[in-house]
Length: 420
Image (cartoon, rainbow, N blue to C red; front, side, top):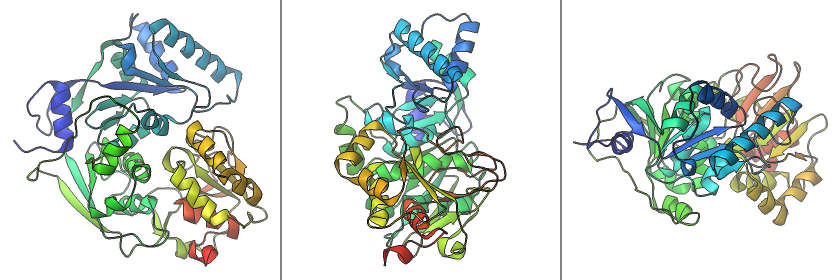
């Protein structure tokens, strides 16, 4: 029977030939993940249920350094307990020393491969879908069960197909692709559905750019976002792991719930206004909006391609007076590469602060929380009220070119105004 990528991966994980949309199946997980905030809650439930051993220490990954250096004693103590647990359980994939954000670090380490079923106690688990994996967010209690038994029940979701066509113009990035999608689908238009991103426009993007699209599938309520692997995908994976994997593609006659076509050929840089990532308009419509802070980086736009875009704008320029610019590389490897290539010097010369790898200011926890009077442009994935600090802070979302140009201009601008 014809099937989508989502159906095929879930069928394999359930040990079945085929699964139907709406069917409830018990699936075996290929990788279970949690982080510094969600793992302590999961372990509390793990122990409360009487569990003593994880199902397979090689299939568990704890990314506990997302907020390193730790902001307080409580978080430091919690992560110390995670380290002890992982040592006792023989979990080798434990990271808590500024290695970086899980959504960038796990692919970088070769832990993400096409065809995998991944369960992660974090809402942006869907980032891994850029490599053709079915990766879903789960609550800490559910992950506690997965840690113990290596399985979970799932409802097979319908799939929305989002097809990008055309060749993106100057300063139009994958962030603009997904913001345009959010404008069409809204923040709940894909609730408990899979989104399959496809189309000839994706060929213009490297995997590091595609991660940004998959990352924000959750902002539309999706269960996950996934892309069919191509040669670029396989080259990325093979460069990082020798482990076997299965490339999964939707059948030509697979049934999609709906198809959304987006032509990126005539697209201009976009911005999401407060307080929804779907509140999207062209950047040029906001050109007089003054800002006090700009954030570039973290799991959505903190890879080398993003830092190179930022440097393209900031080289030879200065951050405007009264504006704070924070740049957060997604991983230590990216940080080191940016250091060797001279990008960090460009950022510091321009007047930016370079944060250590991790979440940085995205969730308003540390390294750049906002006050009531702040207006911020961020390359993050969410601009909900109170997301980055005070509930009255104004948060705009954009791609890197717009964010960096805004830092220089002191107000939201189309990047062409700075790069002419």
